[in-house]
Amino acid sequence: MEIILRQTTFSAGRSPIFRCFRNISDIVGSQTNKQISRSYSDVSGQPKSKSEIDNNKSVSGVENKTMSGFGKAFEKFSLLTRKPLDEPDIKFATLLRHSKFMQLGDPQGKVVEGKIIRVVGNDLYIDFGGKFECVCQKPLKNERDYVRGSRVRLRLQRLELSTKFLGATKEITLREADALLVGIVRTPFRT
Amino acid sequence: MIRTIANRFKWNAARYFTQTCSINSDASLCQNAASLKVDQLADIKESELKEISDPLKFPDYFGVRKLFRIKDLFDARIHYGHKDGTLDPNMKPYIFGSRLGHLIFDLDKTAEMLQDALNFTAHIAYRGGIILFVSHCPQHTLTVENAAKQAGEYAHAREWDFHIFTNSEKVYNGVTRLPDLVILLSTLNPQMQEHTAVKDAAKMCIPTIGIVDSNSNPNLITYPIPGNDDSPAAVQLYCNLFRDAILLGKSKKPMEVY
Image (cartoon, one colour):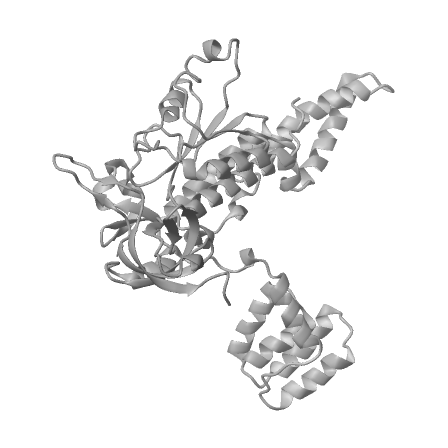
């Protein structure tokens, strides 16, 4: 089936016709693929260049997965110019199921990598991909390494600091995560 | 649909032809000519006829649907809500579920409501309305003000003065034109209470668009958008989307009204 797909790129580049051609091949079978491709290229009215003929010859004999010349260039540029809107939208449920957030499970004790986004005095504001960033004290050892843009390793405690105070019906949130700074991964100063 | 537009054209065409009929001033002859023209008009594509009529008749005249995809919302962390304990009961319909106490928004619902809000914004901008971006989170002040500047609209990202909507004549010493739309990037102030702009805009009959997190109340907001309002990435995305919608609305020239 892959051979048929590649043959169609030589004759016509429009995606609806591409898809339709694949269905015909499924019904008809692999024997008549050469016939179909030839008649299709006649319909399109494009003059067959030498490279196209060469490619057809090479492909028709053995199941050849490598392309050359026009076909290769066509595939490369069609991928570049294909706008993201042409591809089908991934469903939210799928995105969530395969996200790191689901993989994390209980955040307590999990080691993650974060990036320092702000340094205010002795405090480091670190973003590890969650809803909130965590705030950690700058360690005394290797103080120079902890600057904005450094990547650090954290041990998470909680993703959000929110608790219910005595007598309250609703919790109060600090809009901050809680994590322990384990060490440095990469710093912009040293290589 | 085409028939109603064709009828409208019949009336307009008849008027046009009676005015220009200089050779024969007989009104009936001119009307016959107009009816012939209408049949030709009926052959014109429906899309062309629609272009001449009201943009409000279209579900998405400015193409705001193309501004974002669910993957973009996901990458900007819009699906993250607060914890179970801070949930406002009015937000329950928009929650997908709770993962170990952390709430997740249903991005399918969010996307739909975001499209409606962006479409509304574009229409307001198209008709030359004043749009005010409001936010009281100090972390996002720069993002909000920049977005407003790029869109050519207004922003109020500082502490809200209580009387600016309800007593504007006294505050500004004269008759003031209030905004035609208020976009709230966060409906809570730093004290975790509802932002005054929500109530005041409702009092002054100004439509509002608001990003409501799981701890906010969406009741007084005209176009609520359930989503994360705390992450800087999320706020940046919202600002970009609203700015793009406004610029899309402004890019189309408003048609002449007959």
